[in-house]
Image (cartoon, rainbow, N blue to C red):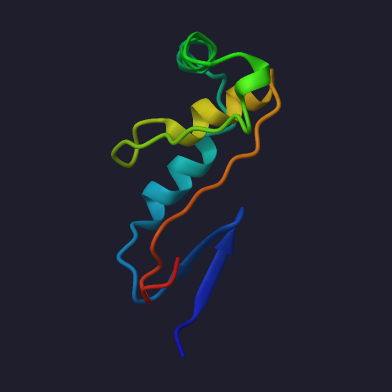
Length: 97
């Protein structure tokens, strides 16, 4: 059975190739003041393409980009100003989602 290490909801198994120094830097980066306007630009984009409230069943969107591009951080910052229910779906090493 593979051993696991849990740091701030991040699970690492010995079968995954993860540089622990990179993980530490990544986790600590969330404690740094956010720089940029990606959260505001994303919100403005969503509002610009929203249809009227009467025609909307649910407000949702997908954010797709390469890893390390700031998707999660932008959503986290957006959630500080607007109601956001973030879902992060990814394939696990065993093939489960």
